Image: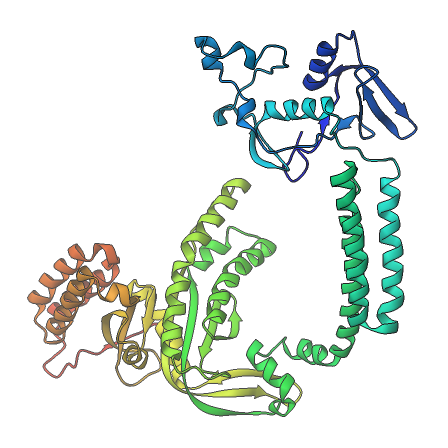
Length: 528
């Protein structure tokens, strides 16, 4: 049987069936070869000591009767193919007068083992090497005092470390540790190579090292206590980047804000009410955490700052408190990665739902991004403040997130963000007056990165989309409807059905009641 790490190091001399003990294959082969009617095992207070095949052959064991072969590299010269034996092409001298074990070496028969000297060998060779070790008297042994010796090294070395770390310091104690570890390791290696005795110094060395590291770290941690206390106190309500700035400069903890050109992101789960009905309060909390964790990791990896969580909604921004010249690009890449992260997350949640025997509904997110000036800083009171952002850019980003459902796309971006990422794959959606605004706003769907933007199929869809919107704005309804049919057919890969349905319904309404010659193509949204 292999050790916990999967390597075979010991072979049992016996196995138990009922109340009787029987010799294992290697022991039985040696018994038959020696012409003995049985084998003798010697025991003591701690368990089995050795196994005697005859007077000349005694094999030391551990206390439960396992033997240590002195394993060697695999030697293919010791193998004889069964096919050659059956064909009669093997020289009889290769086998006559020797112990031969018939076994298999095919991987598919699942009798492949790992030993200290070889990664893969046929299981039958483990027995062969054990027999060879015994007959050549090159087997390994572990004396009864080995456990006590290993423990003594650990205790004595540990006491010395405890005494000398505070006395002479970590630097000189490290040299003493290296001397103890080197001496114990060298002794262990000498006994193994020259005397075939197993004395494992690894436990003692690791125990002493653990003591040394613990004492050294404790001293270092005491010196850092004040900084850690400050960091822990403010990490509850400041972004990680801002916390580091506060630790370095406490004067930052004052009320006020500054104007910065930023990119804002809002992310919300679609149909969350239906999903929440499948869980109790505790289960819903677990689900939210599973959703927010990967999405937050993506934002932070792109230098973003998570402003707040609002139930199943995330608000984040870029270019504060740390400068980010590519804030629009980082925001867009984060949004695309957040959408892509939903597929593996839903697969995992679906598997969990099957295992728990409950219904599963896929989580889908809608995102809105907008870039522009906003005020960012510490908001609140002198007693309690929050590092947050305010401004029309923020409100617009929140409205764009809500419109992602209206147009049936995952990500909606504003015109300023669109201008800063011209290399990305985008589609113009509409000229819309979002709720709370008095002027129109060009909105776009973020479909993918630079690779998708170069895709000939996407380029064609973008051309059809632009032509359709131009015909729609010019009130050329028939042309617009024809282009919508083409957009729906050729844009199936990009899931534009909701967008096509939306414009078809608008055109139908305008055909019945024309908007007038002075219509500028702006659609007034009635929902957030």
